[in-house]
Length: 150
Ligand code: IDP
Ligand code: MG
Image 1 (cartoon, rainbow, N blue to C red):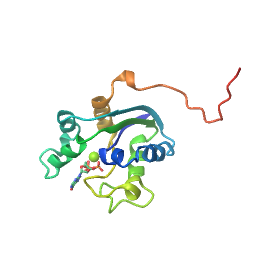
Image 2: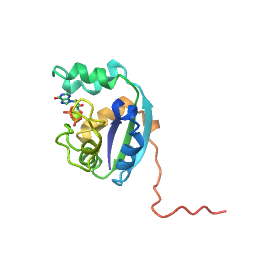
Image 3: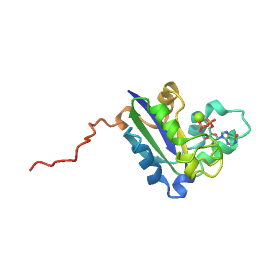
């Protein structure tokens, strides 16, 4: 069973796209097991994006991701990392296919509405930056309509 970290970035929160993006991810069949809203500080952003340190866009990326609140989520299920990456589409929205989150909703590469971990190992590290073990909830998802017994 895999878990992956999703960030609904500040541009998406500002534009009122949180529900749309969560809905698209839920419809992949993956299971939402953790969810929170927060504003990242610079230290956290530099850790999350450490792999990009030294690149020309790093400073702007950290500025953008810390500029305003975002939504962090964990999705769980077989092949969760790959499924979320496919649903997101390519990094540059101009190249992202129609029907993907970025293809449909994102404006440019610097404001591409969503983050998803790129491997199982990265996902574990990224998740631990945002969530503690107690934040990840365990439940059986009922696929049949709920029947409440009285
Ligand atoms: P990803 O988000 O699709 O995994 P990465 O290459 O990991 O893409 O880059 C992280 C984030 O940095 C991207 O989502 C994007 O917002 C930003 N970024 C990547 N490349 C560029 C660039 O060339 N110019 C501006 N921003 C970039
Ligand atoms: Mg990445």
